[in-house]
Length: 442
Length: 157
Ligand SMILES: Cc1cc2nc3c(=O)[nH]c(=O)nc-3n(C[C@H](O)[C@H](O)[C@H](O)COP(=O)(O)O)c2cc1C
Ligand code: SF4
Ligand code: FES
Image (cartoon, rainbow over all chains, first blue to last red; front, side):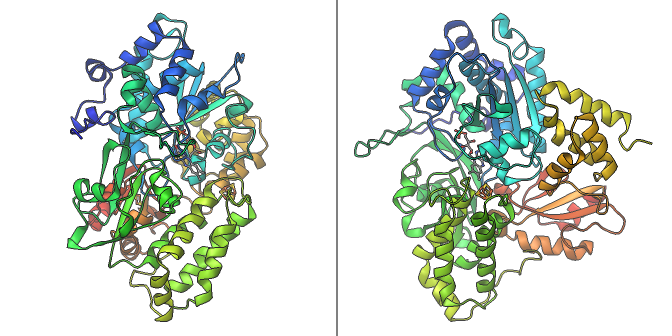
């Protein structure tokens, strides 16, 4: 394969300025001009649909298809909720896009709103992204000043307002209906679906929710066309009629025990091994890897032996993980205890469960407590089966919870027990205790 | 005397046209108040509710869902220092870092130093994992923190 030229990170890698003038000088807002002058909204939906672009926020739903779920000929208003909550542990690519190239994001938002006839876009941004918030606000102000936002954009019949809305430190507000509830000024409790947001979302109106990276891709799809997008990544598996393919590039985040933690843009389908060895500078301290989380902690765990798995929308599932998720890979080396990794993950979910559904609220807390007991040297062998049972009984998949947080909480536990059972058993049998500082707080 | 200054009121009012419902201004209003006053008192909740045509219980319900906001009995110090304890940071010493901050500042997570300058908190992934262990000083990241004293000096302002 010839060397891949980054698309989303092109300007960022070159150290280009985030300012509007510089973005325009680099060809920015050409896609918007093209859409507004040469294309109908339906044509924009079509090109995105034909490109096979799938959502980058974790679920991988085909973006253009989602847009077609909006009720036809709706009198409006229609809203776009831009998901900039990015709270999945080990994920930071949305932050880089907003910090360093805000107009690229904004152009994607404009195109999505033109295509879906949305008249207002709310960017729900996690509070912790203060720098990104200010960078986006500056870009929005510049865009209003240049008639790229507001009334009759570029003299056309298209008008749009974009507002930033800051979160307040709750992971669950990244779930699309939790986000909508939070935006409406309520607790971020996910809604029971259906109705899906496309039919009844923010303020009870049809709403599209898209991730920042997805929207950034839209800009380039409109610019360069669906066929071009399909030259990057992996086509659908002919043996799997339901596979929608893994087209385009992806921002992979690499962190944990590697020499060079970073965010790198590569065609979908890169393997964990290549990410670690070629882009992450190898495992630190000349050690070997024990395993990784392949796509944020919700996607489960991979062993080192599974590192050749391609990170596309299908790969992680083939080794028992939940999916591609956010494609955020965190490596842990062979001196790390799987108990410490798992405890850390379980503590996160126990802390972030919104508490609406009993199996999730109680189950996540229970798993955390059992792991804490194990890591303090008081584990019992039967704890492993109880953990497995709890993990398997919480989530949308078993049908006991409203949202996918619980599936994500269960997956790493299930994977750990299936893939690292001998280590867990040895730990319990040996009465081993964690060598990490026992956290000041649970 | 009202709890909310004219300045805060003006900011809240300016946000109302952004949304089709006044309730949607709840989070922005809480942020304005919290930023300026370091907590949200019952009086402030009542006044926000009045401005947004809500019951104070609705505002309180929303506010307490987000552990981010502080009530009057435990206001935030001048600077909020958050130390990440999630996976990528923990693997590179995040939890030890949190413990060091606790020892140096003589507070537990959630606590505020006696001089009222720094509130120390643990955080779940701050989205700065390439810079693990990461912390935040108010709403700005600090990457690869090793010099604890330097961060404390900065936070003391
Ligand atoms: C618990 C939970 C947390 C989520 N957090 C995020 C998030 O922080 N950012 C995000 O874009 N999507 C997140 N999602 C996925 C969203 O619900 C939604 O699928 C996504 O924003 C849609 O955008 P996309 O189609 O462009 O990917 C989360 C889902 C769940 C179940
Ligand atoms: S599954 Fe968990 S996080 Fe999701 S709605 Fe239920 S309790 Fe809340
Ligand atoms: S795990 Fe600490 S910033 Fe992500």
